[in-house]
Image (cartoon, rainbow, N blue to C red; front, side, top):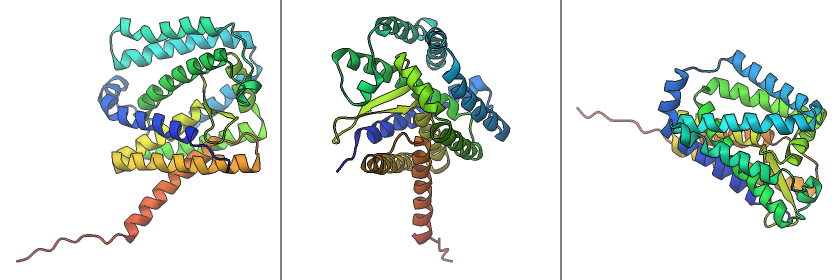
Length: 289
């Protein structure tokens, strides 16, 4: 039976780390952002910009991306680290490590088709670990910082619009796949690679946008319904992801928009909570006079 537990487990783990770190950094981040929140209009603009960025990446020359992205990524790492630990020399550690390692992997031969079929060499494994580690660091901290900008209403709108955009760019235009392939071939940490297990012989890439959506949804869920249910909602998302992967393997489908699986898992969690509360007798206090 073709199923995979590693990718849902990684999705659960990274999302749980973001939910765990959020309350520890929330006060500091809010003081920096001055309690600012996204409006519905801001969310619409954000998703439109994300969609345009995917399209632009398809047409921008590889060499330009290979030069500009590491610079932008290093600046992002510095800002994220500096906000968490406001000491410039500590903030420089991660971007310095990223640039040094990126220069090492730059000239290592890398074949994405071979990677996807799990024909890994030792150098391939080194490159994939490099991309996975830095991608995970970025997405966890970005999720924590962006979590303060959303409310319950705006995260719902964001999830809906992002899923629509992702579906169009994956299934209609195909630009998401083209952009991702270009970035991964440049060894840039924009996706996380996970080998399948126990179904062997395949490897799956999952985009950072999918991890971001999962983290933002569950951060807001934890804020509204408590941390315990926040973790429960992550488990539902991971479970739906596992089932969706099984169906993809069984029917041998191509690339699918993972945001659909994430939103479905989140909605199932909310539905299960509502059903549980509706079936649980409410406790009434009795005042004995």
